[in-house]
Length: 498
Ligand code: BG6
Image (cartoon, rainbow, N blue to C red; front, side, top):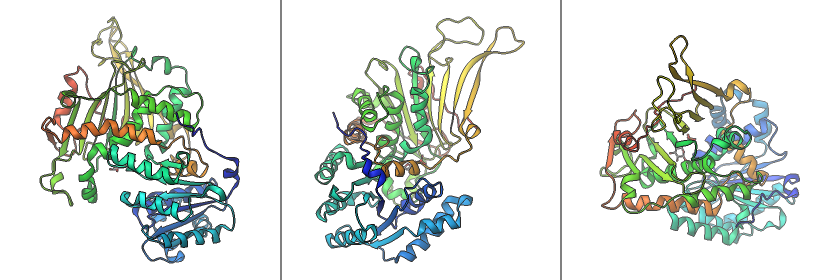
């Protein structure tokens, strides 16, 4: 059992803050982190006086970095960019040249930070460098005394991927824990920062009507789809060493699964939420022997081998579908289908709760078999965030004929607020010392423990065939045939709520 039950010391909230971004010249900084921090400032949410220091090997003056970020933020934030508010925000942006391999550079950085902080200050170190540099950066933070918690708390935020398999994740955790106790380690999964993912918790545990039906007695199967329309683009080199299981399943899809399947925590506190999530992973039935061929489908989009950085003979999967079983009282016998791929029909992330068919057929149009005719709850995570409940209704003036009809809820029709980017919530939570929406060490390791054996089987002679699929469809045809052999059907619908 972990003891990190929401570490939010009073002093942290009152104290001033510094965010140090390692990998400051990278894409994530200009595309996500700075726009998110600026938006928080614009909305008056960024704690007053928060200073942001970018660190990377490139030579920049503070001014040159600010200027570059002005342009990129304008482009990413769009019409809501406000010159006056940006100028005020940009005053607190600093840049310090530094090499992750150099202890001297870390000591200089610490001196610079102390100068601008002028006293006790809590710090967030954000690692957005190449992943192979994470352990080195952490060791340097330790060696230079920058992880010392006596002058204010020191948190480290670590971007994905956290390891490339169970072994490397365990090694990384071990190295991290030599410098930072677990309560100071924030492993980011940006899916947890998405409003609709958090709303799933509210929907399940803030309403009475769903929870009693959220189990094996009423649910036939659950489908979690993260479909991307984009191909790998310029990321071929990285992607080919990763593939869809490492890139999307170990983190985002398993996070969605955990939130869908977990029990209610006693309180919405980091330790308690994460304890419940971890129990879901512990209950997933390990695949063995013939399971790998029966419960997994792997595909590659036509044209992947021509992408820049991809070897011509690559067997990397750009699509995968898995059937997982959660062996506990709530879910025993309910298949959880997870699928994700690049170059699919459209961009949609959805969780489909397929309820059982009515037990007895009274009306025309009911098929009462395999859940195909049962109610369906579609939680659309993105785009057009919302929820659709599908219910049988009587077709007017047609005897007792029934038809599946839809009740839609769309966030933007009920709330005028912008849907914030996931990084806004996550950065603010890190500043406030709330780890509820970050992954804990055991969670990450358990997730690798589920993915590793599949990767292993896919590299063995027992691997299921790598099915090639046409870009712009729902993955390989085999995926549809496969689910049909279980008496089920994919819910192949592009954003259902418009
Ligand atoms: C990233 C993956 O973690 O998530 C990318 O590395 C993927 O390959 C991206 O495109 C999807 O995120 P989102 O928020 O666009 O669904």
